[in-house]
Amino acid sequence: MFKKILIANRGEIALRVIRTCKEMNISTVAVYSTADKDSLHVRFADEAVCIGPPQSSDSYLSIPRLMAATEITNADAIHPGYGFLSENAKFSSVCQENEIKFIGASPDMINAMGDKASAKKTMKKAGVPTIPGSEGLLESVDEGKKIAKKIGYPVILKATAGGGGRGMRIVHTEDELEPAWDSATKEAGAAFGNDGMYLEKFIEEPRHIEIQIAGDRRGIACHLSERDCSIQRRHQKLVEETPSPFMSDELREKMGEAAIKAAEAIKYEGVGTVEFLVDKNRDFYFMEMNTRIQVEHTITEEVINYDLIKEQIKLAAGDVVSGENYFPKLHAIQCRINAEDPLMDFRPSPGRITDYNVPGGHGIRVDSHAYAGYTIPPNYDSMISKLITVAQTREEAITKMERALGEYVIDGIKTTIPFHQALMKNEEFRKGNFTTKFLEDFDMDAAKAFV
Ligand code: MV4
Image (cartoon, rainbow, N blue to C red; front, side, top):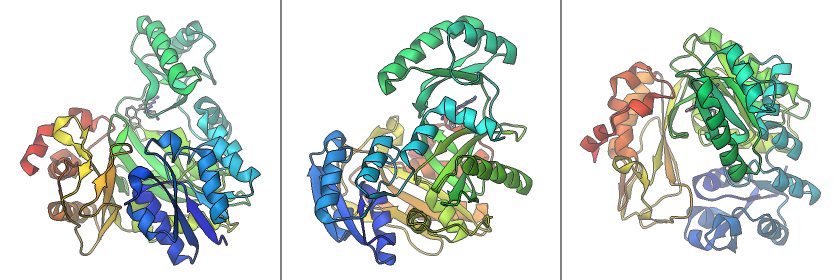
């Protein structure tokens, strides 16, 4: 087992990793920018190294600075958390060259899944359902037109290097294809330095349901059931839950097997997530594979009573999976509490937290680096807390969430708490009636009642 892990991240996830390391008797090294000197991950790690100024490019994204901190503290592994360098092939390979264990995917795996068109090809070959469309990259607009005519409009153009909706265009008619192609290639070229495009049938009002998987060095994988992440706004997830209210036992079995097939086809090692789109007929299609621990791993942990960070560290150290799949008996929901104003188009609201009270009691979990007097810097992601409830049923988990949101005091800044309170009251949400389009039609003014 590793002796000392450097956590190349900040905020709640850095704290989350430190907590598990402590329980595993592994020493921890925090790294921090000058903006984060008063952060809890710095306080609770065994050692802390300042790696630079607030800008991420000169601190949390600087491979030389992170490697220097690893060397001076004699850490033998790096946990990248999520975001930042967690899916950076270069960082993974620099770790490899320096004989530091990167607790994440190998450079080859990151590259294979980072190129979306080739990831899709790999999955199709492995027998995982994929969305009808081009076989790999499009050579020209005309090729796109030919394929679109065959599969029928609407179609969607996607950047192969994309993610988070960037370089993506929905196309309803042939006339729209060429302008969409021009603007999407331009956007992708500027954002990713790669303007490769592929095309597929556009699935209307899908659900985003992902399967948590774990694979070992023997190439054996198991699944840990699903998370429904359909409640998103502009490709930012706001609420996640498991099990999905849309899921049947039969569909879970089928999607679980497909996710295992996906992981075993590439001999995936570590914890990962296979994302699917699920249409109204309950047909499901491979969308992307994430090679990192995700923000929403917490709800899976709660329903199967399992520490996924511990599992991730053990798999990185060479442990093997049991080979059993996990099916939840409980229901968990996570609300992302962001320092944003839901009544002002979710505008960031950094600043000092003047008063702070965390909810507690049975079935409540709060993963956060916030405290009374803490100042949220303007330089990073606005997520400051994850509020998770776990109960026997979905109804109870929602009731608990309403109760917990009501107890959660975060003064001095605006947060997404009032939005979550309004959502928990929404009839359609309560019925489990939602798709990825849900928040587009949601009346944000409903949050006013809770401010
Ligand atoms: C789609 C789609 C409909 N049809 N692909 C959005 C981000 C990127 N990872 C893929 N995305 C989508 N791909 C086809 N063929 C709809 C989306 C999509 C979406 C997917 C998951 C969660 C939220 C979403 C919001 C808008 C669009």
